[in-house]
Amino acid sequence: MISQVAVVGSGYMGGGIAQVVALSGRRVVLADVTAEIAKGNRERIILEAEDFARRGLFPADAAERVAANVSAAPSIEEACADADLIEEAVPEVIAIKHDTLRRISGAARADALIGSNTSTISIGTLAEAVTAPERFLGIHFSNPATFIPGVEVIPHAGTDPEVVPRVVELLRECGKVGVPVTDVTGFVLNRLQYALFGEAARLVEEGVASAEAVDLIARTTFGFRLPFFGPFAIADIAGLDVYEFCYASLQEGYPDRFAPPAALTERVARGDKGVKSGRGFLSTTPESIPEVVAYRDEAYAAMTALLTKLGDAPVQY
Ligand SMILES: NC(=O)c1ccc[n+]([C@@H]2O[C@H](COP(=O)([O-])OP(=O)(O)OC[C@H]3O[C@@H](n4cnc5c(N)ncnc54)[C@H](O)[C@@H]3O)[C@@H](O)[C@H]2O)c1
Image 1 (cartoon, helix red, strand yellow):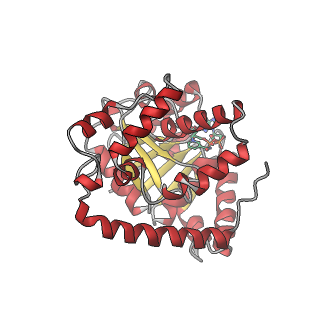
Image 2 (tube, rainbow, N blue to C red):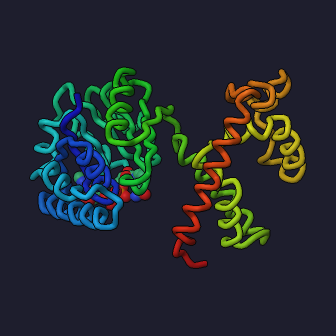
Image 3 (cartoon, protein in one colour):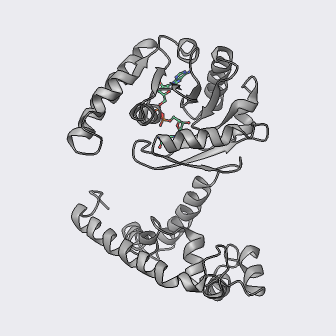
């Protein structure tokens, strides 16, 4: 049972993680470089919770709950001593992470779990600084941790497999969706995000479209689907054979980076073309098409209504 969590590094991400865990009813102890910084960040997240509650984004009593459940420790060692889980959220600098993880390992109970919020550093590399590294894994929240549901859960090669479902369950109880992924550079989120960004930047560099036009197309076309259907569901619904045709022309235009993936061509070759054939990357059957289409239409109409209500993001090009 994870009932007390220490967050080491109480900055932007650490503060958000602390709010989320505190609102689930668990005790959270913050630690930072000094007791004063941890104390200041505790006060900051209480005020922020108050503001979120006033704007209807957090429950009405959120600030009281954060204040009651979050404390600031005088040191990393004191924060870790009684914790069932310690989440490290110090800056993305390997020397700082290693030093902090060494201190956490030295102070944590033998049965405590240790997580890192690293965005890019391999968990295996960070594990080198952890004593008993079988209790260590990546727990990668997205910015802002308070509102983004998905969290990458990243065991390294030596993580005890039983740790993963415990962390996923904790995240579920905190209203998050923990998704286990393998420990590779960039994990899943950043490999996808940076692949998209790379192509977007090339389009602007080549003068094909302005940054504003790229963002507008991303948001109003394929990006509009993404809250409901991931890339594989979208491909299965479109038809994997259709994807293969599209790849053929993309490959002609950009042979260096648009070869069709083997996972696609192999499926098409054996007749697994997606929803229309009952199997693709998913196993959605043709019989379920009306249900999928009904869901899709409702989701997209609701999304249009939400976007109309909120208006465009106040960013300037
Ligand atoms: N900001 C993001 O968008 C984002 C998203 C996902 C993951 N992350 C990851 O989360 C981690 C933290 O990022 P952040 O944006 O919250 O940074 P931040 O600078 O806001 O917070 C870092 C905190 O760590 C403290 N700190 C520095 N050295 C320390 C030490 N030796 N011991 C204890 N505390 C120390 C700092 O005082 C600060 O409070 C990084 O690994 C980052 O890559 C960030």
